[in-house]
Amino acid sequence: PLEPSNPDKSTLGHGHADHGSQTTSAQQGNRVRTGTTPSGRNGAPVSKASHFRSPEVEAEALSRARKKLNADITEGQVSNYTATGEPTRHRVTVTTNDPNGFGYKVVKQKDAAGNVIRDSADLPLTTTDPNPLMNAKVIFEYVPSTGEWQPVTYFPS
Image 1 (cartoon, helix red, strand yellow):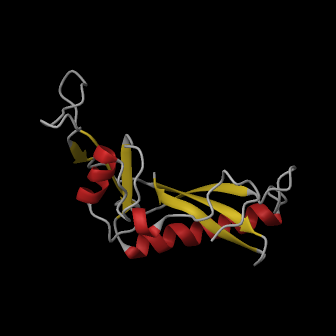
Image 2: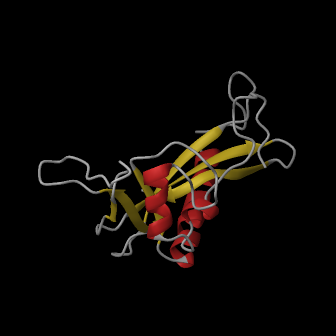
């Protein structure tokens, strides 16, 4: 749970439920097609959706991001609160050395001319991009009641 003072900001983060290795390419494709996330939340369709390829690389991404966050805090690059008193959100991007990357993304299928291919219901067809995603993004937010930074969202990118 997050504790933003701005009522327009989310009070819950997401990561594992929507991008974890337990999610499938079919679930990510459904998110691209309909907007329904692997965790069942309804939203707008997206142009691409990604998931981690294993629990180990998901843990690697979070660990590397936590170390980067801690270094940024130590170096004074980020504070707990914004100038308006809102808990700070801080984006960290990390890279893996694994040639298989952190995960894969599902994208809309396109024809040779670059047009999105659609089914009879006019929804886009999807495919898994074969190129591994070498980066992961983790957005942390400071949680005042615990004095800790928690992930708001994280995913391979």
